[in-house]
Image (cartoon, rainbow, N blue to C red; front, side):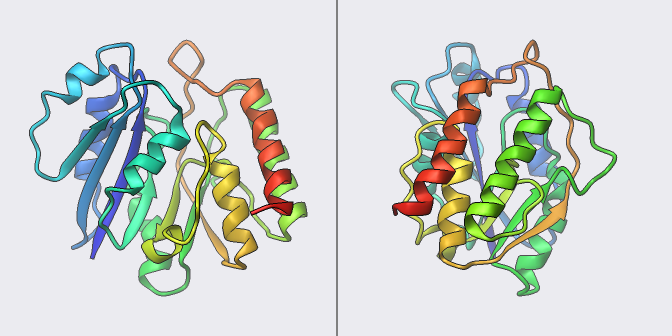
Length: 229
């Protein structure tokens, strides 16, 4: 069994090596790890740092222009060989030590798709009230449109059996990956299982990139894929 860990990266020179160490050290039992990093044409030293990495278990790809997180994930999926795929942000907001509990529902046959819910862990904080309520709004819209029962639709930690994600024809370029993949999985009537995760939010000064317009795009994406494929 192999886990493909996809890390889309853009201007994360301060955190990329630390998150890589956390990912490599995360205990997932006897499952093999395959780390796939896509540098989305970073303007800082991220690319320079990545080019110095020599590790056979880490695949690194470089975009020749900046596209967005969704496009980086699509690039990585083309090179993933694991039976299970997880999305990992390159910052330090999400804790790789949560991998084991995220994988458990899949390994025990209870689920084919697992989301890590920040909401289910009552100890978690949030960076800005607008981000918190924005996430709750997106989740509510997804639940209403698709008849599902999620608590945290826009979470980074999304885990898929390979045979599931391979059936999803993604068109996302930027941050609309989350609503698109949620919509298309829900339309296939595949249950999304949630587990509580740890979350350590960062501020805009620390590099948080999501903007108000990304939230509007996410809402439109959920509405659009309710009626088109």
